[in-house]
Length: 198
Image (cartoon, rainbow, N blue to C red; front, side, top):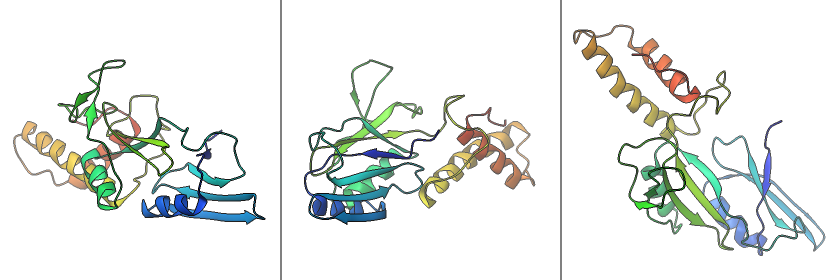
């Protein structure tokens, strides 16, 4: 089973369509049947799951959806992109541990799963950005790797470059002629939650 769609309750389909289109999310479907039913499907870039917004789909109150997570590899860049698109995004914060109160700013060690920012759609449905660069073991299909965007891939290259510099330093500072294979192994291991190469 794979999660395919989450219904997000809204009050105005046209306004919701403008908002989610402006986020850069792909509009997969837009169906209206009479005056009482209108469904639109949007998919965030690189996401295997989508959302449905519209009318006649749910009895939930518009704006009642909370805690919908959007995973990003670089929360500073993701927040800046949303702000550039005109979205009001809260300041970045982190939680030192599960159940701990929020602290302003990103996690000092930039650990995966600890850093967040929030924004809402025009109805008040709340979205939570969460920075994840390295999945905990068992949290993903270890045989599948992909990158949601050129920005995510570039961030993965930067992290691999830093780690590879440390790898070369441990090996006497000599240039590693096999660096493309090392980068590939590192990036796949990082994304799939497997042990990282040294």
